[in-house]
Amino acid sequence: MYKKVLLSLLLSSNLLFAQNGIKIVGEFKEVTNKDLSYVNINSNVPNTKIYLDDILIGEAPLEAYEIEADKLIHLKAVANEKIYPKAIEKDIKLKPFRTRTIDLNFKKGFAKLLLIGKDGYLFVDDRFDRTLTSNNRVVTIEAGKQIKIKIKNGEEQFVAVKDFYANKFYQFDYSLKKKASELKKRKQSNKIVKKRVDNRVVKIGNLMWEQVKEPEKHIFMYKEADQYCNSLNLLGYNTWRLPTIDELKDLDKKRFTYPLTDKYYWSGTSTKGKYVYWQYALAKDFVKNKVEPKIKTFYKGSTMCVRELNSTHK
Image 1 (cartoon, rainbow, N blue to C red):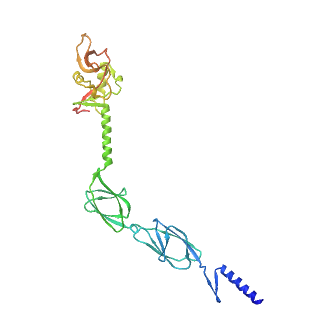
Image 2 (cartoon, helix red, strand yellow):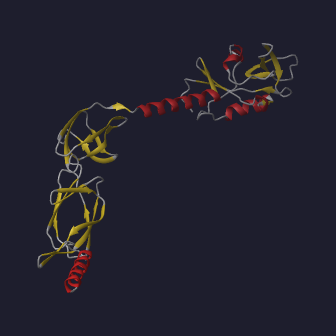
């Protein structure tokens, strides 16, 4: 009976010790639950590999990673070695049940770049770097991916986008060309100016003719028509006048964007008419293709002004 009770007590004790992480080995006890501490590891470079005592434990960021307390542990962190050539190494040792956060800050390496071509202004990722001359063609550039190199001289430029790796040497033989978008903008600008000029005037031979968008609003007595042309300031020119009758005769109405009216157009050519006491000017009807004298103070005619292209005055 006594032996059975003693055996029962020993089994119960072993079970209790086992539940608390203690194994009975002969007369000695061995602790299997070691005291732990925790580390958080962050990095400024994604996918940084983390080694503890030369064993890869994962990639940053790591949160609450368990390490043995009171033990000196060697940490090594490795990022993209093509851009961040130097690993970060440090020793860590923590007291039990402590947590430490480690922030890793990798620094980029540098590449060398030899630029051969025309002088100009160098921009790296759109930031001005230097003025390129014959004496400073070797450039130290921070390593990285998809770095934009631009060299500009006036309207000409060279642009390249390339990966640059640390401790490497690169050479660019470049030629400067006009930017395609600038050429396109210039063409568009020329088209706009041309369209604007064409819509307001028509150039025929050595004459520039006013184009009237709303000709029904330009119907005047002769004196008003003459004053209108003499005071006209169009496209910066103020040397406008009424056309001569010969200029009107030679004028092809099909050259105009806007239609002409069915009324006679005033010329600046005076003439004699049926009644000697009235003043006349010759006018042309473009619909009937006729020329007739019209009394200056009675008739309201259509008005269109003209100027010589070789006029030196504005």
